[in-house]
Image (tube, rainbow, N blue to C red):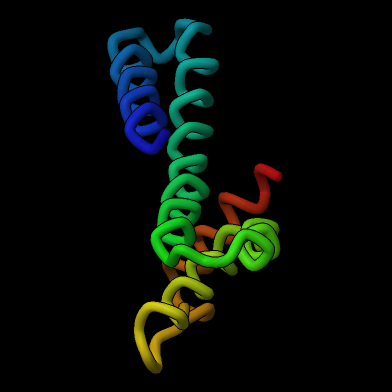
Length: 102
């Protein structure tokens, strides 16, 4: 799934870049590229959670977490004394872009 989202995102971006900025076909192609790029975060988070080989019931609970919650859970389970630093510029950017989409 991750590979598909990545390739689709790139393909839509390439197609959008081929067009003149005034061409109205640019907008849906650009939006599609952005959406697929943002969905990559969810796919990556799900891949991380699946790699933990959690019990089915625990996996179901964790799967309901927001994307950043999944990454934070993964870091805490996989690496001692690691967590997602929520106040960083990068995390704030993700929250702004990803959660605005929801």
